[in-house]
Length: 464
Image (cartoon, rainbow, N blue to C red; front, side, top):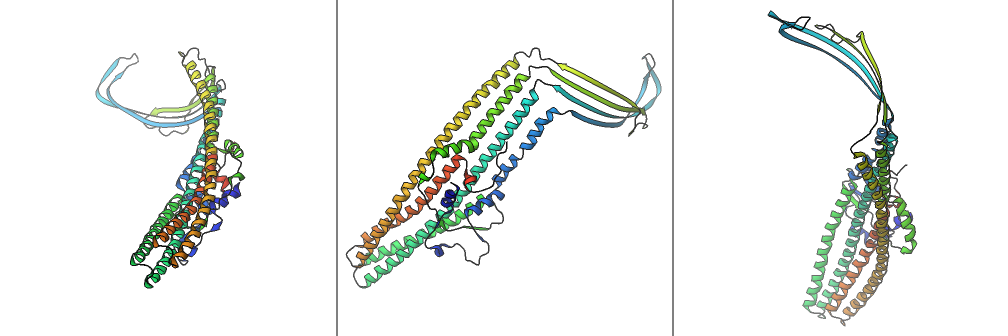
């Protein structure tokens, strides 16, 4: 399947008129001609949105460590020192009676203290295990969400690449049509000089020629804008002027792709379905954690402290105080009655779990429909490619005959112009339909969530 995708999306057949549509000379060192593979590899390294998605995936490790930390004790140390003073006229005796002095007295003191505390929850009814499982499942949800973003971004880059190729292909067709109109104008001018046709016929041929020149100028602008959009989608600051290889997608019969196998692959590979399954695991762990809150909590804590207290600055910044104290505490908390809050939380968590199961089914149904619908679009595009190719061949042959008959003066200029317009439309449709097929194939791979895999890229994959 991968070989088929690369063949269609990157192209197999070279367009005619290659030299006529070059956007920069060979000596222009600022122009970078990219293949699809090169464009995707650069986007993986430089696209800002892609980098943001990868950055979000890095949070998985810290989230798991945070949940695992609930099994470890809390440890803290502290140190403090300070000085205080007060200026007063009144003091108290041993019995607490105020004694008034005739003068104010300033009293100052200083202190230093050090401490270490440790606390450990011995039992929480299994709630920490459920919380750890929930953290792992939530990390998987976030990772799959980021992976879905990666799939979307790579799809966008490929679409911009196809648009750039399509505009170049259309420009090549228009330039070939321009060359044909120039030839027709020369034929009409010679016939006019021989008095075989009238001046209105000559003016009609000249009008067709100028109209085609305007179309070529318009498509040259479209090519430049498509290259700018592609450069923005890639995000590589080293790319100043972007160009793409001049290849035309080569469609194939979709019978080579088994839709049932694509559906089965999509159900396994799709980040949307995976995220829904991970969300259900989050709800399952949340329900277990809520039920565990009914169990008693057993915790152990201990602390040790040293301190000193003295007059003036004697105890300031004292690093070795002699006074010390310590404690050891074992506590049990039993939730006897929480005013039905726990029952409501359990019921809500149970509903969330059942709804998460239904969301998985909904995601699977939508995915199957999307894959099968895009496969139908691919089949339609393949049929249209065949029909457009036949129509282009018929239109070209008819134009050749009408041109010969026009030279023999058996056809009018209006009949020739009609044949020219029909042949030009057929050629444009034939080129456009090949890119319609490539877009349909890309949409199919996007629906299945296998864009990166089919492009042969090594991206951050899910690891359980």
